[in-house]
Each structure stands twice: as C-alpha cells, then as structure tokens.
Image 1 (tube, rainbow, N blue to C red):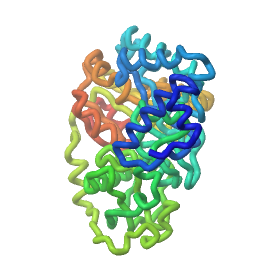
Image 2: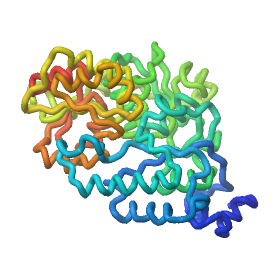
Image 3: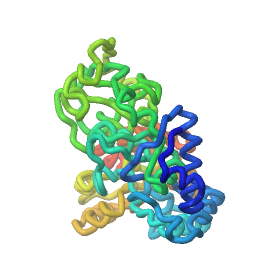
Length: 413
C-alpha cells in the first residue's frame, strides 16, 4: 500500500506506539482487501461493548491508554456505540458487579484517549450526521447503512479494532464503499405492497436483505410511493443489514445517489418483485397471537425522541402486566430530553423501564434473560428478533401499538 510521509512516520513509531499499532493494523486490513492506499476520514464510530471485548479486550484498551497523552489521543472525533451496562440501572436487570466493573474500566480507558462516550447507535439522528461524499469509519451496521444510503457518506463496516485504528490515525484503507465504483447497484427490487408503520419498514428491509445475501451486493429499490421518515428508514436499513449484511441501498427518487434508476446503474438489472407473500412469510416465522410474553423490548436501533413519545403515549394510563417486563433503550442525549419532557416518567409509571446508552442485544442479553427467566420476547424491531433467537430467546414481531398492548395483557394480542 502507498503511504505518505505522515503515515510512514506513524508506522515507524515516530508518533507513538498507539498510532504505530493502528497504522500496522490498517495495512493488514488493507492488504486483505487489496486497498491501494489509505483514505482520510473525518470521524470514527466504534462498536466495543464489554460482552464482546472481555477482560482481554479491555486490558488492550488500558494498555493503549497508559501511553503519554499526546500519543494516545485520537486524531479525529471519535464516538461510541451503545454500552453493555447502564451503570445507573443494571442491578434490577440481574447484571453483575463484574460486568459493571469491566464497563467502568473500558470507559476510563476510552476517556483517557479523548474518545467521546456518546453510547449510541443513532448518531446520525443525535450527534453529527456525515454529509454526502464524506469519508468516515463507522462500526455499527445500522449506522453504516443509514449513513451510506440516506446521507450519501462513505464507510465500510469497521470492526472494533479497525474503527479504533481509524480514530487514532484519521485514516482507513481505501476499499469497498470508499470506491465509487462499488456503490453502483447490483440487484434491483420492485415493491408492490407499500409499508405502513415502523415494523412494516423493518420487514421490507429484512426481506430485501435476505434476497441480497451478501455484503458486496448493492440493492436498488423502486416502487415506493412515499418518502420514509428518518425512523422508518432507520428500521428499514437496520433490518436489511441484519438479514443480509448489506451496508448500502438506494431508493429511487429518494436517497441522494439515486435520483433515477439509471443514476446508480440499475436500468439493465432484472427486477425482483417483493410480494406481500414474501413479507407475510417473514412475519410468520416468529411468535403468534396468544403466546405468553416475558419481555417487550424497544431497541435495535435505539429509540429517537419521536419514538420515545410514541411509546409514552401508548403507555399513558395503562399498566404493564405483572409477569411481563417492558424495556425501552435510547441514547443519553435522547434520554435527557425524554426525561425533561416527562416521557420517561410516563413509561415508568406504567411499569416499564427506560435504559440509557445501551441497546438490549449487546448488554449481556443472554445473561439478563437467564437472570430473569425470560425466554419469550416481543419487539417491533425486525433486527432484534433476528438476533435474539441466537441468545436463547423465542422472539416475536409486532407493531409498536401491539407490543405495548401485549405487554399490558401478558400475551401477544
């Protein structure tokens, strides 16, 4: 790979050991993907919950943080994905002091490196959305697909170490979606059945993700009769990335790179129709009416302020069933606003819990389920029901309205 003088100095250790490690890591990733050089990035976003890191990963972060301040400080603004432990509210969930201590150690190491502990997977709604053509190094799959597709920024799925290396160096290998040629459509989908509420958008994204089937496929979607809201397209993209590892999609006449089908090279592609039967088949693979519900979860992605208001409105004047838990996860900045506006109080008065800076599936979901005896889980997120089947849960999918009604009834209504 071609390196400039500053990058060569990093690799030689002249700018400190953390940057030497980071540049060396970038070279290894770049070599794997045949990158010609490194591309400067303006910001980085790191997935690194303690459940994934373990003691060894946290220890590695602490080693980097022990270097002199000028060597360990990140080179570009760097933010974090949701945490694995809400340190104000973890005990009632059954999380242990060992889990909390691991989280505290990680936070201290990140803070020493000037990493901003934003603890969110919706930074595009809350922190600093990138703009069209901006090169970034983002980790969370829902973040990447939204920023690539809806905002027109350039990012690959960065693993935790790669996002950290990008933050320390301000660079990432120039491969994949940093190359305009790889952003052209490779599969064309036609939608006939229009999505309605958030879950409908998630189901549509999941079906297209499954049909795409590869990180390297770029779906272009035509036939939508409405422009989705930020929350609708958030659920659409997060589900597509979960079911298909997809990092980029185009919506004809809606997303910035696809003013027309021809603009993304989709005219010559054979159209694949997404039918109502396809959508129904995906929904039917989960729990059904009358099934007991142990826990209702609103997460993956974290809730926007608008979603928090919607949940609060549905909870107002109602009581969650004694045998069912309701959990809503949001970012710290949204939590503050929701608390100020009385939304948190409304949800908690009904018997629900609002968690700050976490997202259910990456906060020791298996251990929480075992501690509370939860197996039957209901959510309006197509992403989370896809993930949690591997964590010992029996997941079911429903609209936000039916999720709250089911939480009050103790069974799927």
